[in-house]
Length: 141
Image 1 (cartoon, rainbow, N blue to C red):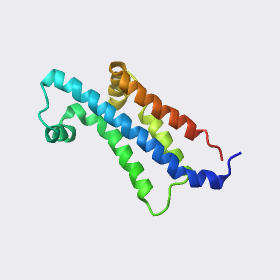
Image 2: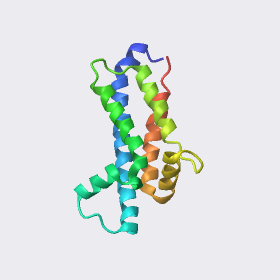
Image 3: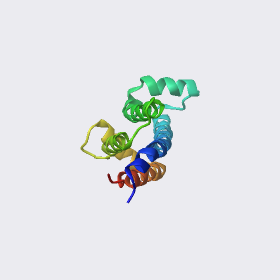
């Protein structure tokens, strides 16, 4: 059995692992969406133009929820008090809820479902996040 103190002390490390896997998933989704966008609208001329599209074009709006989750994790890791098991469990639950692809769900879930259908790289990145979430949610009080 894992002690409560071990769980509390390892929570920041586990949260960093989840963050890293979410960053990889986010980048993979950005790359996939950029490719599809460019097929429909033409080549994006520069990284600055791409950044402007990410911030303002409705095509990419759905990805903001994942960006916000990553920022939330960053804030937890930068806080004066390190995140404990409760914080880790909350992020795991929130991430599981967000990354639940569904043809009939909210906008993120529908677009995420489509991204998983279109890109093997997105499937691999998703699988890594799910693996980490399952490993970390297995911690018991």
